[in-house]
Length: 231
Image (cartoon, rainbow, N blue to C red; front, side):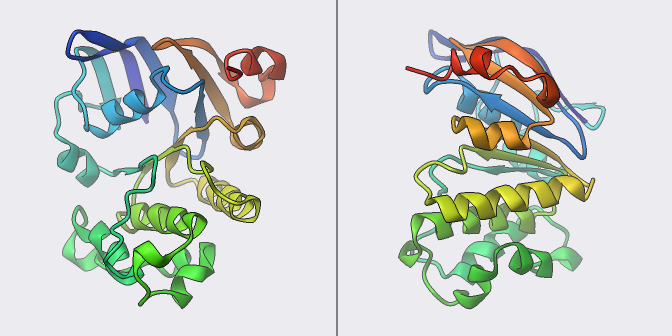
């Protein structure tokens, strides 16, 4: 459903991505791994339309979206959970969730009950301010906000960063459940090897703006991948 074809991306004169290609299919988790600063987040920004590419092509559901603005990509079913969560600290949990209404049709502007089934703590905290939640709870809120948009492509940027182990397990279970519904493709950027390994149907590893390893989760070689994760 998603085909990223040999994209290049620049920040001014600096080239962040060099011929990056990546695919993601409905009903599968594609993991993108690598050290800090190798281009993982830049790849996600390119997919979500948050930064324009210099060349190459991004195809979603058979349509070339390379030049579409971010809001148009959101309406087409692409949702991103950014690194650092970026929830609104002064808005309530309920209001944060409702910001996900923007790209959806009026009849779909409600919070699906499945969100509370995946993240029960949010239902108990609907009136609490987002900034008063723990880091792990804020991460759950950020994922839930993306799900409110009814995505068919869910992009997550390091959802385990700075999160306590119990909530990492909850997030892993939620991603597995979403994958198993067979209604969305999931792209997961992750440095926590065990988390990525356990979820990956397919994987790619980046180094210095390029894809240096890729394959299926079943064929993933831990030693080879870890070589590009250690500092």
